[in-house]
Structure formats: C-alpha cells, structure tokens
Length: 116
Length: 111
Image (tube, rainbow over all chains, first blue to last red; front, side, top):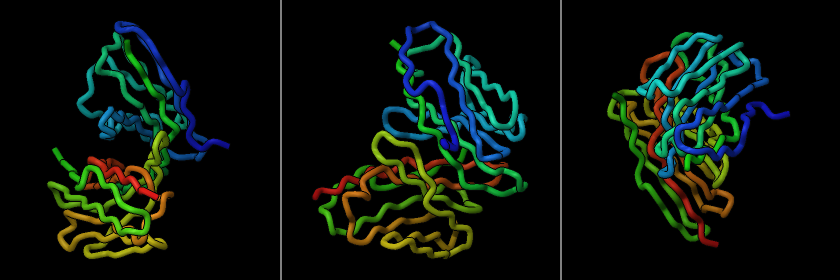
C-alpha cells in the first residue's frame, strides 16, 4: 500500500491552462504539505495544512490554491499556468499532532509538471 | 527569512572513499533532519537531531549537530554505489511543523 500517493505522475500542459494535482495519505497523519522542487533540486515549501486548516502559506503566487477536503487529502490547483511553474511538485505528510514539534515527513512520489 | 545552505553542491567520489556534506543555517535551529533523494525519487527521511552537539550513527553514516545548533554534518564512510543521490538537511526554528530544506548535496559514486 502506498503511504502518500499523488496523481498524476506526469502533467504536460500549455501556458495559460488550469490544472490540479491530487494527494492522498493513508498514514492517519494530521499535517500535509506541498513542496516545489525546481530544476536545480531546491525544495521549497509552499503550503501546509493541519487537520484541514492552513498553517503555512509561503510567498506563492495566488494562482496556486490548495484545498483540503479532509485531513487525508490535500489537492493543489494552479490557474493560468506559466513556464516558470515547470517543476516537480511533492506532497508530504507528517503526524503533526504535537505543538512545537517537527515530525518526520513522508513524501509522495512527485508530480512532474511541464508547461509548454 | 531563514536560509539553510549546504556545501558542497556536488561531490564525485571513488567507491570506497569517504564523503561529507555540511549544512549551515542563518538562524539557531530547534532540530535538524536529514533526507536522501535517489535520482528520480522522492526525499526519504534518514534521521533527526535535537540536542546541541548530538552525534548519531546509522551503519556507515554519522550525523552531527553543532554546539550552537546552527550547523550540522553528514559523513559517509567507505561510500558504495547505493549511496548515490542528493542529501538534504532540513532545519526547524520555530513555526509549527515547518522545516526549511537546505540546498542539497548531490553525491555521485564512481565504481
């Protein structure tokens, strides 16, 4: 059983389109994240939700909108895609139940987004 | 904002040689984590260090957390081809469940 899964694995689309990436975790974790990894392999956090509540919102264009329908799912919707959005997007989850703690993060396999 | 730098950015070693990557934070950390990402894969947690001056070992891997809790290192003894990948440190300094990933060190092992 896959602990953190993402769909799709690959996404190729034209500039200006709107697309969504889905993430699900079956670990029973409370906290989920979205990261962007660019071509230089830098991993930057974008958003984090704890029990469906947004707790981290980094400086990300408002074309990116996360949605957490329940604590096992965190989806990422991107409007008006730009060339610079091309990257690998990783979803991750952590137990996240203790205030002030930093738990191990479990990453999904990634979604490689290519904007043409 | 918090910055976490790693050096070197790339390292090529002959199989059997040792390897070290260094992680430096612009702010004092509450703890530090290390992750490994194989080529084409996703980051996988290796270890977490919490105490000042802490040293932990996992087989051929030795992790250290600096006394000032602003730097850390990962040392691999006698590298093997299975060690190939990018090693990231990730520092936490307040902020619930937020870590800042380092810039990563890509290790290539030549058989």
